[in-house]
Length: 238
Length: 108
Image (cartoon, rainbow over all chains, first blue to last red; front, top):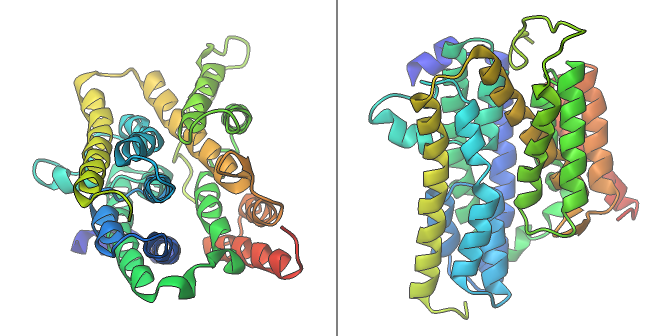
């Protein structure tokens, strides 16, 4: 733990702190929604710790509350969470820890911890950012869910505070420096367009996976325009 | 909760175990296979594409439909600020503030 504070500069830690605070507020709404849809408090409490992936938990609670079978809800949630497989492929080895530490390091893999890790310039800082954000989310998401479940309908309408805009803003702020590379930007826009076009027709989670097809735009060997041998991700120190 | 508790516990366990398996399997694959540097760069770019698609879908859509104007407007303002290298705190709070303000003004 101590090495996290030494390795990361203050600004990155403050950014991670704000992200965790946003996660806490979304957790509040998750707990409140789960309890007010008729679930006992232990459902959001246990789920937030063991699943630790917000969108899939909202989906699970929503499907079961609407009368769907819990297995169908679990499958829908798994579809949403399948993006963690390419995340694991993208993370440099060692970021999630070694030996026993990796058991926990694997569990705290989520959108936020992955994006903070990718944004760091070197392996030591990638690992520190990954763990700081991962452990922060592990504390704030269940904490928010339990408190939200306890105070119930008082925090039901998080939309009024614009909190639903914070998650996409956090991710966007962290990938924006990769998007300055014109080829990455083109591929990312194509991927976003594919996902948006597919959203009305496909179950949640699948559209985002389809976006990976846009990687093909980057595969063609750049014959005429030699790409600078720069790492596309995390190459620039912000 | 209309469903029996045991069924909910079974569904919840399935979701938790399967999610952990997804989190683990990507890393195991990466450790088994040695990727050339170009492939490693592609894998990281793939993560950026995935995250960009996540931004687009969470900003613009809500359960298969359009999420309304105020949320994407807030995220758009955040995107412009981030592009212009505004501090992270400003970017994220601006997203929430713009969205909340538009809703106060009656925008969906």
